[in-house]
Amino acid sequence: MEVIPAIDILDGRCVRLYQGDYERSERFDEDPLEAAKRWCDRGAKCLHVVDLDGAREGSPRNLKLIEAIARALPVRVQVGGGMRNRDRVTQVLATGVSRVILGTLAVEQPQVVAALCAEFPDQILVGIDARNGMVATRGWLNTSEVTALDLARRVAGIGIAGIVYTDIQRDGTLSGPNLETLRQMAIETGLPTIASGGIGSLTDLLSLLALEPLGVVGAILGKALYAGHIDLREALRAVGEGRYQDVSMGGAIA
Image (cartoon, rainbow, N blue to C red; front, top):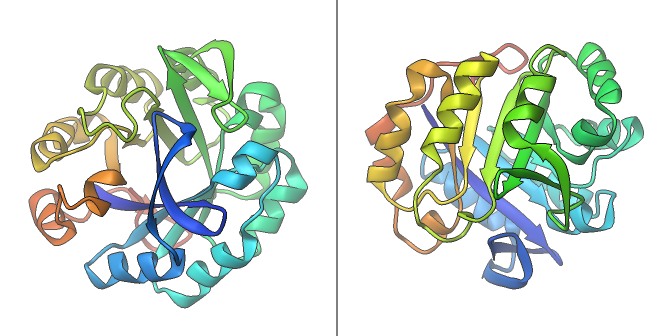
C-alpha cells in the first residue's frame, strides 16, 4: 500500500483543515513547494494536492503552485479542488499532474465524468467526501442527498481509475480511519480505493494494510505527518510501496 502525503493549499500556503472547516485551518508551511520537496526527499512517490481555494470558489485558484510542484519533482501528483467542467480538468492536466480528482462533478454531472474517463484514460479519480455518511460537495460546504456508498456504486462502471474516500468528521482529528466504509466501498465497487481522513498513527496504517487485498491500495496522510505523529520513512518501511500499477506513469498509484 502506498503512503501519499497531502499538500492542501489555502491562500497560497500549506494548511490542514479540521473536519473540513475553513475557519479551523492550521498553517504548516508558507511554501507548498517546499513541503512537497520535503516529502519527496523522505521517500514519497506520489503527492495528493488539494486546491482548497478552488474547491470553495468552484474553479482552480492555485495553478501556478500546482504546476511548480508537478514540474519540479520526479513523483506522481494527483490534484483535486474546483474542477467542475471539462475545461477546468484539461487546464489542470496541462500543468503536468498525473491524475485529477473529481467530487462535485461526480454527484451533479456523472455523464461528464464518464466522458472525461473516455478522453483521459487512467487519469480520472472520483473523490467521495462524506459527512455522517452523506456526500459533501462544493468544497465540503454543501451536503447532498447521496450516500458515500451509493455514489461509489454509481461511478464503479464509468471508467474511473479509482476512488479517494474521505471521512470528513475524522479529517484532521487523528482519530483513525473509517475502516468499515472503506471495506464496503472496495468490495462493492472492485475499484482501487485510497483512504483519507483520521489516519494518526502507524497502527492506523497497519489496520488499512489489512484491507489492501480487498482493494484499499493507498493512504493519504496530512496532519499526522505535519505534526510529527508519523515519520514518513518509517511509514514507508511499514507498508511498502504499493502494488496497483498506474498505466500512464508506470508505477504504483496508491
